Length: 239
Image 1 (cartoon, rainbow, N blue to C red):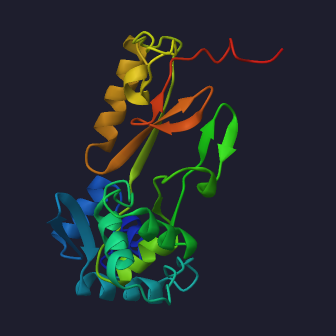
Image 2 (tube, helix red, strand yellow):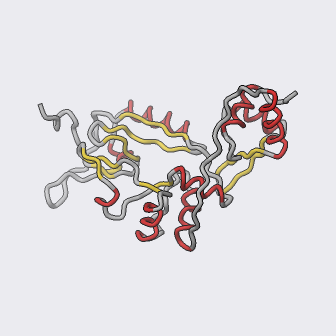
Image 3 (cartoon, rainbow, N blue to C red):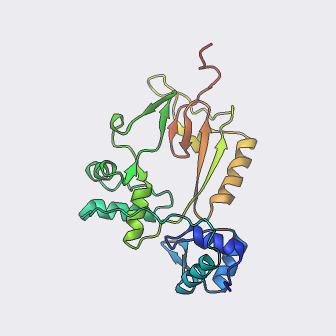
């Protein structure tokens, strides 16, 4: 009979690519039973299924023939060399799976064209911009890009993504020499005790591996480092 608990079996059955995440208590039991191995890579805690874990999973599947098994991760049948290959592996090691800007625009364009990395929704004033409309935009790994990295031995564990709302109160840094409002990173623009409490909770949830985004009433979902000018979404609405 399988030694897996129902929760442990679900965790292993879900993460057939070998890199596992799940409920802390269930993960602790899997590690104690030596079904999952824990290690640190580039400052990131990574948990992978052991040989005993794979055997226990197969036994559980035999005992549960009607259970719904998760599909295997996609296989990427392409070969990259040089900088594009290095860029994918470097992005996999990044907590946000972002392709480092140290790789030039040509390298990032190759990844974009091959579907290994993509521009996340970029909205300004209600308009969504495409990759080609922006100059040298930041891109992040797609599922195909993560699969490519894992096929080359670099794990891409799942992240915790937390969305926090924007607030009416915005910091004002005055105007520049052209009379335009000075911008601030979105994470610094929002002000007030309520937003500070939201950010504190988000930091606690994403401290191990995760990302916080702000849901802006004007710009949509934006990263904390996205530079924005102070705005009033209600004042800019068309009656």
